[in-house]
Image 1 (cartoon, rainbow, N blue to C red):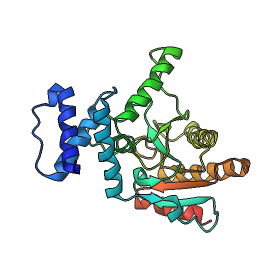
Image 2 (image 1 turned 180 degrees about the horizontal axis):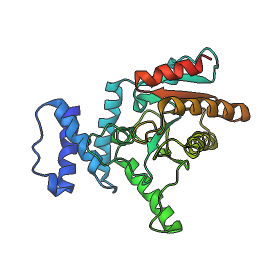
Image 3 (image 1 turned 90 degrees about the horizontal axis):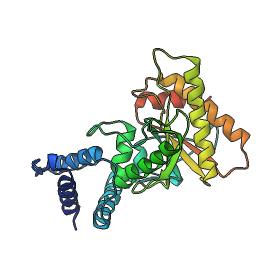
Image 4 (image 1 turned 135 degrees about the vertical axis):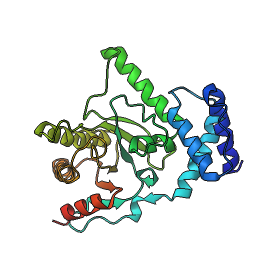
Length: 268
């Protein structure tokens, strides 16, 4: 099958399972088709799919990763001040490393807003439908243990396969929501996100990990303060764990403003 044939098959298969979207005409334009497929992925509730669906989906998403361009950690250079640390600007879903961080919400099954540009949405869109079902099952286990009102606590990470992303694992962590203003408890919680995620990566034998800018989006943590905490916490953790498997930490940024902040911090 060509990519277009896969895309149309997946759209039709999703529409068949979601009757309320059956009347949506499949666009002729390639980008419009991609957007429709991603939107359907976004709103699909967690559930298993057929082996044929997974086969076509996985082939499609694997090719999409190649089309976007995969960056390997071996292609990156560490910062001059610390060979353990890297700064990379780009789409974290195209990074081939052992683990990437997903800034999740406390329901842990991803973002359901069609085409929303948050990291949770992008990661879910390109990892595939298996990811949402995986995190759903993990959350159901927690609800059986702690009650049906259970929500994933801030700074308690969850690890899953990365499925169709070029990384090996995704570590999902809920960052602090800054409200009504930045307080010391938010700073403590953010540092805990980094420490707990590093712990979990090391426990799973990861040699490297890529952190996004946790909580700096809709969770409203100031970019400069978040970066200071991220760099300080990671350096301290690496110093305290010299004999663990984790040797390389990538600070992944998307915005130019975040890149400048991290450059200033990492060049000190």
